[in-house]
Length: 143
Image 1 (cartoon, rainbow, N blue to C red):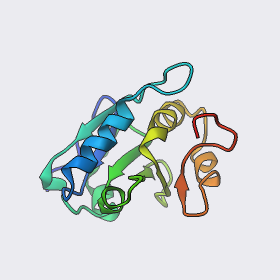
Image 2: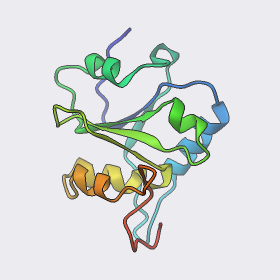
Image 3: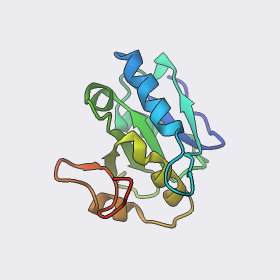
Image 4: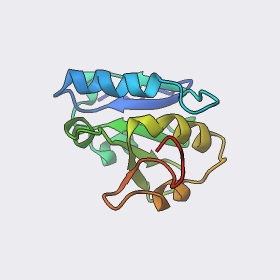
């Protein structure tokens, strides 16, 4: 399997190819500007069947040594099969590779804030709903 490429923007890696309509919906939701300031997600998409069914452990081994980003976003089987499509966000700075799931409409804020270390990974994990999915911070009008 080939190494995951270094990309200009944070990567959204597709590892499940069972539902093309779900993938289109996910990408569409992420491309929408959000909030009064119309935040955009600065992301690159990797839609290559070579990465089908890639596990988190395999993914981590395929990252180049000089990978430029603090985290990676994965559209895996769980995301594709769930009606809300909660994507997997993996922390690449922490040796334990912490993770959480987030609905696509929150990727703009996650990408913007984690990329500049404005909000810590723990802030997102602490704000997850009971089912382990981040849908926004309490009191957020976009929630």
